[in-house]
Image (tube, rainbow, N blue to C red; front, side):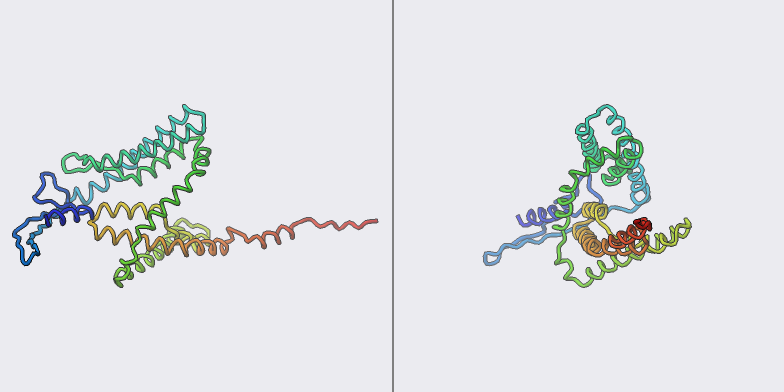
Length: 302
């Protein structure tokens, strides 16, 4: 009885646990074995032995599988983007085109989930697609080859706001502040935030310097990249499924903490640097410029 409670608890928290070694085990799992039990003054006790198993690290799992997943995700996304372009040519109604675009998004995600849940493999090589990368490639391919992409995306933008709101609400609900009672986790979160900002600024400056971009681009581009949201949240959710329960929650909460800070300060920093670079002009300055450029009538009335 006790072992079943512990078994169900571990499974509910994302860690595969069994009473015996399964025939087709996952990379990481544990086996519970009841070695004894007793009863003392109405209190029942049980002794359990826990054996943890971890997958071996080899070239296929470390190198080939990740590279193959990236390649297949880009390939499938590109092919589906081309098919969506061909299908859009059949319909002229905006409503039908919009429904078709949404259907292809669901099809893309469904293929990725089927590949993951179905455990597709050739020998030791896993056949998987990243739902995030495949969907991004679908949109990239479609928008670059379809002549009506701008019109369809404009229609799509009108109903995406509720989805964004739900996405951020559910993501924020996963942020557990009790994790940050540990000073070490707070330190990890702060280091993550700092290292990302340094990487964005230094990387953007290096790239702009190598490409001989405008000095304003070299100086300000990195700061405009500080905001972080959708893709990072999606990747953190994938980390929860890829790592054991505790490590996955730490990664998820660290990223959520970072997104919270970035979204509070990022837009303000972006606005400041865009003003300093001259890419946006305050309304009062623009009104003064327009008034100064207006022609002056110097003719005097007779």
